[in-house]
Image 1 (cartoon, rainbow, N blue to C red):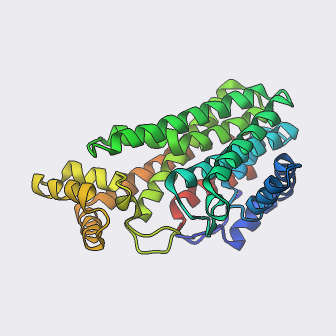
Image 2: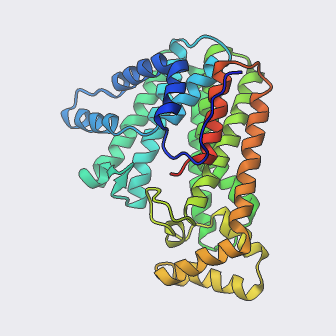
Image 3: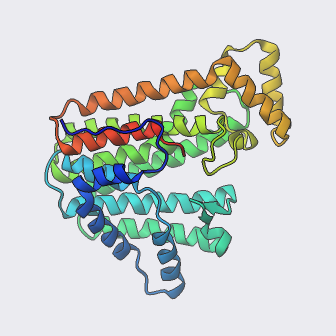
Amino acid sequence: MFYFDRPRGCGKLPEFYMQFINDIIGDELKIFEKRFAEAVRSETPLLDTIMKYIIKRKGKQLRPMFVLLSAKLHGPINESTYRAAALVELLHTATLVHDDVVDDSPMRRGFFSINALWNKKIAVLVGDYLLSKGLLLATGNNEFEQLHILSEAVKQMSEGELLQIQKTRKLNFDESVYFDIIRGKTASLLSSACAAGAQSTCGDASITGQMKSFGEKVGIAFQIKDDLFDYGSANVGKPTGNDIREKKLTLPLIHTLNTTDPKTRRQLVYIMKNENKDPEKIRYVIDTVNKSGGIAYAAEKMNNYCDQALAILHLFPESPARSALEELVRYTTDRKY
C-alpha cells in the first residue's frame, strides 16, 4: 500500500510530506511552474514586474497538485494536463488579486498584496490580465472542455460571493444557505481543478463527474477548516475573530445561533451587527460558540465531507496518485493555517 506515517495536526506542507508528493509528481510540478511562468509573461514592463512578484510569492500550489494527481490517477500526465493546471492557477491567482481589492487587504500569504504595493486600479487590471491569459491559454490550444469546466467555476464563485454579501446583511441565513455559499465561492474551483485534471487524461464524462464531486467535498471541508481557525488561538495568518469583525456567519456560529436559547441568540446577533469591532465582545462570541458545541459540530461536518471524498477516491484502483490524493484530503483537516 502506498502510504506513510504522518503526524496529526501538521501545518504547512512539511519536508517529509513534500518529499512524498515529489516522489510522485515532483518532475511534473517543476514543468508546471515553468509553464505557469511562461503563461503570465508580459512585454509590458510593469506587468512583467508584478507577475514576477506573484510567482516568487507562490502559495502551497494545492490546486495544481490536485490537477496533476487527478490526471495521473486516470492516465499519463500530458500537455493538456499542464495547461489545465496553469489555467486553474491563473484563475485562482486572479480571484485572489481581486479579493484583496474587494476586502481592501494589505497582505496576502504573509507579503504585501498587489493593491498595497501598487494601487487598486492596477490590482484590478492585473486580475483581469490573469483571467485573459487563462482564456488565451485554453482557446489557443483548443482546450474548450477545460475552459467550460473552469468557466463554470468562475460563475459559481461569483454567485457564491454575491449570495454571501446579500445574506450577511440580515445575519439570519441557515445552514443550507451557508453550504450554498461555500460550495460556490470555495469548493467550485477545487472541484473544477480535479475535473479538469481527470478530463485531460481519460476524457470519460462519468469519471470527470466523480472527480468533480470529489473536489467539491474536499473544498467544502477546506472552508469549514478555515471557519474553525477563527475560533482558535494559533497563528493562522489572520487575526482570531476576523470573520466576526467582518460580520461573516461561519458554520460554528450558525450552529450556535440555531441551537442556543433566545436570549443568547439576541446577544450574539446584536454583537455581530453593532459591536463586532469590540475585542471583549468578540471574545464573548468565541467563548459562547466554543461552549455551545459549535466547534465540535463544525469539526464533525468537516470530517464527514473528508470521509465522503475518500469514499469517492476508493472507487478507483490503489496507486501512488490515489495515496497522494488521500494525503491531500487529510491535510485539509490537519493543517494549522
